[in-house]
Image (cartoon, rainbow, N blue to C red; front, top):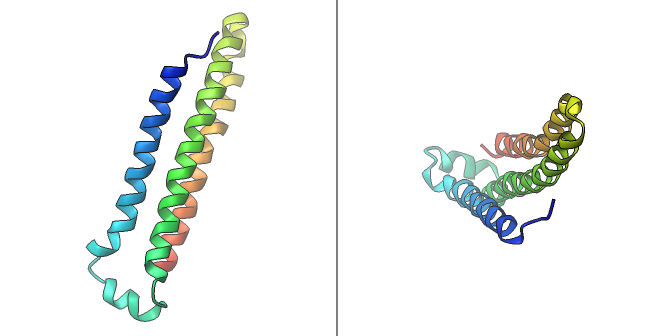
Amino acid sequence: MKLDRTKTLFWLGHLGFVGLASILALWLSPAMASDAAEVAKTLPDGAISWGFLAAAISTGLSALGAGIAVSNVGSAAIGAMAEKPEILGRTLIVIGLAEGIAIYGLIVSILILNQII
């Protein structure tokens, strides 16, 4: 199977957009927080902003990495299933492991947000 470069760039562009949107949403959320003044009293200056930025980056980059991993593993799994259809269960496990990367990034961002909120 030949890799179509335009399709790959199309999906990478969409993943980049989703990552950037999540970074902006999490970074701008302190401005929308109702108790930001209370949190700001207990943490050093700039810690809240850096915490939200760290949470956004961990979520965005892990989602981007998971998208790249699933695209590579998924195409290889489909190719392997075309030759040997009985390995469907094994390929689903490998694809699930690749999707776990995004969940790990989400867990890290939740842990970061629990520390600053």
